[in-house]
Image (spheres, rainbow, N blue to C red):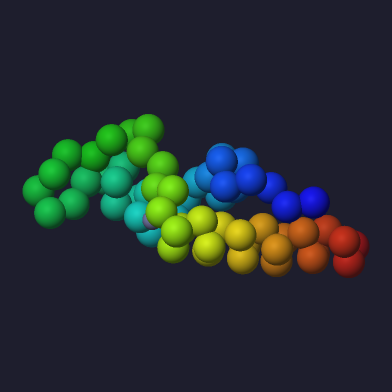
Length: 59
Ligand SMILES: [Zn+2]
């Protein structure tokens, strides 16, 4: 069963964009609660999820 984008954002919160948003960049202040949910981050989370669920199934 595929998780929703929102579930993925909780399971795999830490993407490059999330780190940028939390840490701040280009002189802007970070937001400690920021989680990036752009298409690129969602796609990379989905790949991570697929990889991890493969590992669990194969165990
Ligand atoms: Zn992003």
